[in-house]
Amino acid sequence: MLKRLDWYIIKKYIGTYLLSIVLIISISVIFDFTEKIDNFMENSAPVKAIIFDYYMNFIPFFTNMFTPLFSFISVIFFTSKLANNSEIIAMLAGGMSFNRLLRPYFISATLIGIFSFLLMGFVIPPANKVRLDFEDKYVDKFKSEIARNIQMEIEPGIIVYFERYEERTQEGYHFSLEKFEGKKLVSRMTASTIKMDSLNHWTVRNYLIRDFNGMYETINKGGSLDTIINMDPEDFFITAQQAAQMTNPQLRRYINKQEKRGLGNIQAFKDEYYKRFSMPLASLILTLIGVSLASRKIRGGMGINIGIGLALSALFILFSTLSSTFAINGSMNPLLAVWLPNILFLITGLFLYTKAPK
Image (cartoon, rainbow, N blue to C red; front, side):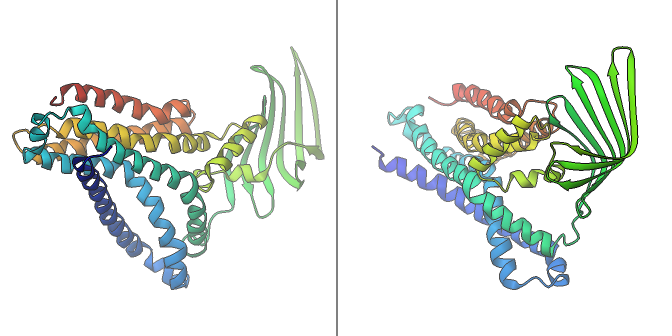
């Protein structure tokens, strides 16, 4: 049963969070509009499309991006204010335990986390599609249709490489295909060009095939060869933006499909998928840190706590960005990379919890 004090803290927490989000989103919209107004005018973007196709879908994306950071800053801000006014001391002196004090904070953080999870998994992906389609049409109008330096595993043990692939002509240049048995190279095909005839049907030109059998090598070359290769040109243009346009079920199905094909360039998709579960929980972890840090009245007032909070926020963003970069580059397991900042900050939160006033 929630008491009046619980409702007071919940209203303070969520109210401060909403105010912070409204302020930062308003500033972001103003800066973004100032940056893109020339593109809008140059490409004759309709006012209705700018408002409803772009900015109405811009707002949920940036709201979710700033949610962990501003939920943390909100906790630091109003808890420091309570501590500075000796309200927390009065609560604890009145018989309320620190664990009991945490309850309304965690209820608020859970509501914000659920809100973030629903936004990331089901609202933002279709909104991103509309927003990015608008950008392709009115902002980045001459988007490149050429993929360069493509290297991917199309099946287990089969790796292909293109120096360049043009979507318009469906033709690739300086192509190679290598087959491995374990770590042993057994065959290598190179071709000056390769063109798609239909799905999985390709024609290679000026090709050279080298088959390796122990110390022996067989060479076969020619001008043109029709062949079946299990690859889809859409995979050459895979970007992190595509992952952001998929709902949770769509993203899970896509990852499963590509893993069965042995496709190696899906790290960005795994990173995006796991992030949709770790980010909502980050609000709870950062709330624990914020309350534990700001509930003690210190010399220097709330400014010190806010300064520490901003420094910790910057560290959290830095760790999250670095771990995602390592995951996408294949240097770290995406699941570990996405959860590592949460794990490190949970340990920090538990340490600060032991130092909080009881």
